[in-house]
Amino acid sequence: MPDLKHTVASSLNARYEKVAGVLRDLANSISDEQFWAKPFPFGNSFGHLVLHLTGNLNYYIGAQIAESGYVRDRPLEFTEKSKPAKSVVMKNFDQAVAMVVKTITRQSEEDWSKAYQAVGSDENTRLAIALVCASHLDHHAGQAIYLCFAVKQ
Image (cartoon, rainbow, N blue to C red; front, side):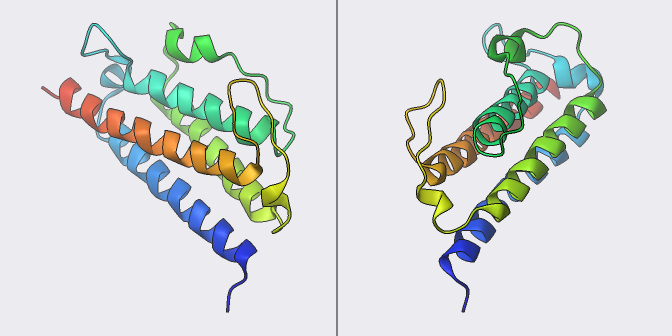
């Protein structure tokens, strides 16, 4: 019978990997030009959402739990004008998800209850921030689905 550590890690990792797969499939369905298109006068491009998700994961999980040293520039996630290649942006996103999965796998049962603190978050445990980041990923995946639909019109 699996223990709590395994259950938490496998459940969270499955969710992160599933949503990351959805985002990968969506990105593969659009061109580089569509990746950076902003179909509405408000909101973001698909590319900016992926930059934002990458920064979010690298900061809240990477810098704060894995102690990666990542320094976040949140405003740039929404304003990046250089439009890096979709393949580069998605590779960086995949690396962030892999880091999250590795970090989650390494947590002991006791680690999930450890105090957590980060700028921009009021979560107070590692488990809470892992759940919030998974929800955040899900939220923006929904936006990405809609953006893909809009840029293909």
